[in-house]
Length: 463
Image (cartoon, rainbow, N blue to C red; front, side):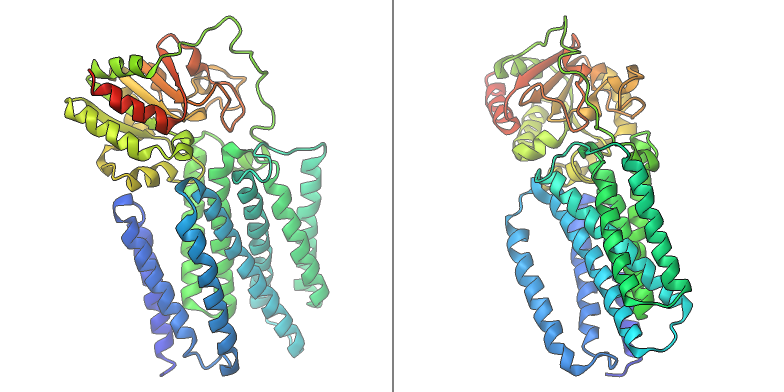
């Protein structure tokens, strides 16, 4: 194959990544975007076998690695439920960062073995890709552990933690300067890799579960940036453009999510959100909760003209999106206007609720974001909250001492009636009690979301 065609092929792969990213902005076209991105990646991998810079004797290793990776991916892709998708995304993102770090390490060892002077730009790029890739790898594994509940989901803090983190970051910077400004020694690079891995752990450990969507998005940006740097080192156009796209889009998404929480990125990373919980029972003192049966809730729905459904992580855990779609259909058949309100950080990863509802074939035009839907709540008869907690807590508006104060929330408390389906009165990932449960216009229906809504669908037919 003419070697001049390889850059053209890489460019075609990069264009596929760009178009795929555009298609992924909507659940309606996201599936096509996935296929397009997979096609672009196939082109990039296939071109590797025609690159004369790669020794033929290494083809066996490359093919073997592809087969092993494909085999290991089949079972998880078919067996992991949608509730496990956030931690799967975190794990895959971490593996990407680890792969980039390994590429940087191998390239550094190869260049060191040659003994020739290394140009400053490739050297700096290799060092940066190793640092960012290691932080992304270790941090993503911690995020996976928190989401999978292998590790405590709460923020893990200890005295002097911020000082320790600063020392670790200073150590990374010092090692990087020694490698770039001094003699590039493999032992220094190995030390840099180890300390960077520790930094990845130390930064994510003190972040509470409520901030995991932002953390996953940020680490995804790190992996993309590291991949882009690796593409620069390897002179690979597809890797450079693809990594740049992931890095930029991940950073934009992270910033937008921070805005949706009315918090700075610095506060998310260093604020240890969720490290301290409100005192148990502090809100409950002197207040009562109205506990309704499914039949009572069905009567409320049968007399409503408008309903806004607010899905949360509880819906994902119970896999209740399909029965929720059935409820929507039943209400619409009665002439009731039904909408879905999606908070930017609902669930455990960006777009979690959108993906679940798309899986249940809920029309995309019925999904409204926070800014568009909040003005509609005061005129809505029923707001149905399915497993959401922190994103509907009025304390974000009314309690300056609350950890979530200032965070934009869905104004479900302003609806004429708010029905909350929840397993118990336990707090959400932020670890604070929800004032919504004690308001006079709120009724609680306790139980598994899927089971409760299934019974509700049956009960509505009786009215």
